[in-house]
Amino acid sequence: MRSIGEMAGDSGLSASALRFYDRSGVLVPAWVDPLSGYRWYEPGQLDEARVLTRLRRAQMPLADIRLVLAGWSGADTELVRGLLEAHLRRLEEGLADARTEFSAIRALLDDRENLMTSLGTAAPVRVGVPADRLAAALDAVRFAVGTDPALPVLGGVLFDVEGDALRVVATDRYRLAVAETGTEGHGGDRVQALVDAPLVDAMRALLRGEGTAQLTVDGDRVSLETDGGQAGGQRLEHEFPDYRRLVQLPAGRTAVVDVAAFGEALRSGPVRDHEDSERSGVSYEVSVVAVDGGTVTVRGEGDEDEHRVGVNRAYLLDALAAGARDRLVLELGAPTAPVVIRRPDDAGTYSLLMPVRLEG
Image (tube, rainbow, N blue to C red; front, side):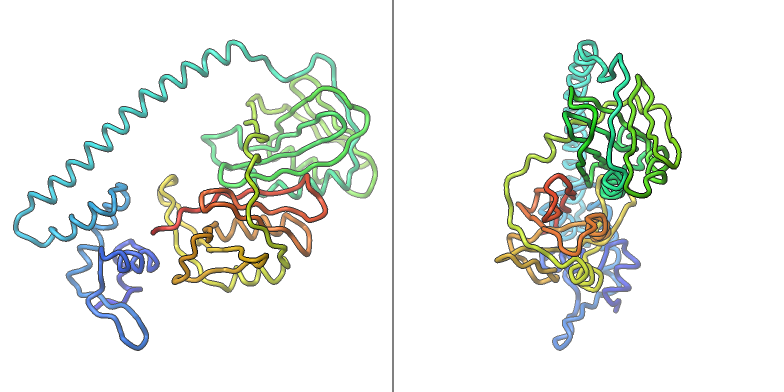
């Protein structure tokens, strides 16, 4: 007999996935200890678990997976082969449809590129920013900068100057962070500059004390000058996505959390192993949280509340640290809506974390 831990290690399925497939009636353990509830599997179930792993990676529907495993040990393989071929046809048809739609979207993009102009300005734009406020703003968003070389547009921080406000924004698709501070000497039209991560870090190193930093956008160059020196370089040519559309969310359930206590509850509380279907080979631990009556809780395996939301635990801990407050506001909407972390005293600074789809 194999324990659930041994089964997980040998099959490629996590222990939480094995528990899920047990509850779903897809791969039921041969024996469950009536006292401890611990699951044990027969040696022959390892092959089924490995098949299940492959079917899961191929994104076969759960109903079909159940039938494949039900017919796996039989002498007649016609049903299994038919299900595999039918799913493969669906994938191929879906890919063909996606290619058609993407081609149409690319054509629309080509038309837009011919009409759109750069946000750069002919005359240099210079604004003064309180050094300590800009330092705090950069600290609040730096954790969300993307590192995927295939998406260089997300590999920096957007400096967005509009009127007398400066917003800095970063996102890696799975989390988005925004911070706002006031400026002096502009008060005009909107100006944007996308700055790569190394230059952002060099700018941050200059921001010491409470003086005023001078931010300059001159054509394709951006620089920051303080009493301690200057850092500058070419701004990224890419156009950052319109983050203002991404943060327009319906109100959710909120709770004010003690950051230290909530962080400890996350670090010591239950987690679920998650394999990212969008990023092959990427896995991480998911915390399941819920807000009820103004109180946030970290949920265990058996808590199936409809209001629970799964979130990458490491990302949530990073966002709590970047919030730089003893108390923060946690906002949960639908299970498919982003988790929002806000400062109670600063409406312009917040983070959004994409939820993780919970199996079942």
